[in-house]
Image 1 (cartoon, rainbow, N blue to C red):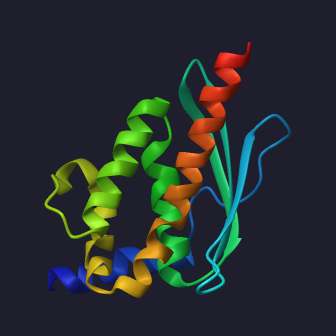
Image 2: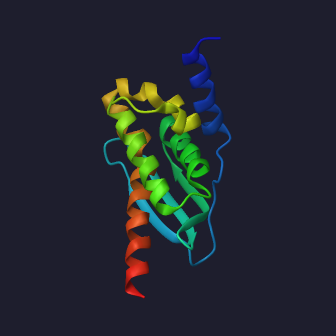
Amino acid sequence: MQLDELYRQVIMDHYQHPRNQGELEDGALSVDLRNPSCGDEITLQMVVQDDVVTDVRFKGSGCSISMASASMMSEAIQGKTVEEAIVLAEKFRAMMRGESVDTEELGDLEALQGVSKFPARIKCATLAWQALERASRNVDASNHSS
């Protein structure tokens, strides 16, 4: 089996069987984002305790790349500190820009690397990550307002 086919299977598995899809109880950070160019939308919810992402859920609608990326991101950031999640987001964005990154650190997220060849689809792949970055700013704001 070729690597491209394996990657396609990973993306379709996450699209057809999304991980961490759903809603969290009140008290979770929540961010709604929409990609106006294609209509993808996502609501990302996170629970952060002692600067660690202890739970994450998403709901939304969109193309297979957008929803698979959200599913993969939700798995990748669970249990990480907010800072580690943001560093991962930065590496993911670099990969989407076609920059050379250590894909071993990205794990299954490497399956989305081929999206970088299709500029119109990059926004689909990065929508959930943008929501993560916005939510992390809300974590920072709530930590500094106490």
